[in-house]
Length: 113
Length: 115
Image (cartoon, rainbow over all chains, first blue to last red; front, side, top):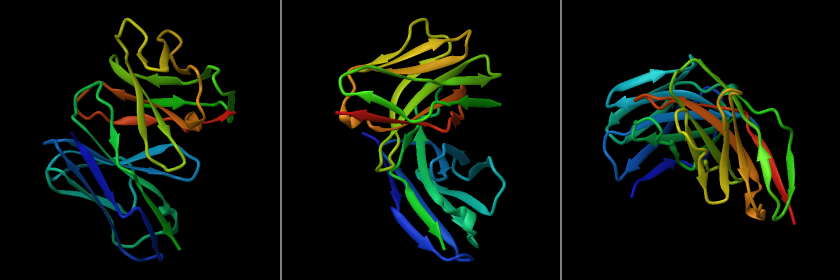
């Protein structure tokens, strides 16, 4: 069966510090991968998605970036965090065919202080 | 572009009763899917049910059913026989039928089940 791992679960970082969140998927190959962000009490906003190694599409311009160095690894990064980067970050995967739901990791709660 | 609207304020339901959570959508895609997710206080997103735009019948998954009215662009979630564990945020989402499978989510509805 397929599983998705996301870490860390919680993170407190000062403004201006770098960020690296990692997500890996097991039990499948060539998944579509996604990074979503959820502000407190709000819906999910798609940040990045990837349909293959090295293929990254950005949905919202901001100081975050994403990379996919391996087939089942997706990394969310920032060189300098802003206060507005605080939120709940969720990684997700799917097989990429229509009608297939996204399967989410447990999320990372990021607080920028 | 796609848009999901969930405007209900916090919903309350008595245990063992049914509840309907509203969702309206807007999309220019001729073929699309509609999804419902549950988010308990722990934060994980749990997939509940899916409806394809060309599906002839409304989707059902155990106690969950989706009341799909294409002409009204609505995809309401019906939870039958509510349980205390159903207390959570519920999100409606839509995605175009295609390889990218990107989903657009609504702002969610808070459901509280009373004993």
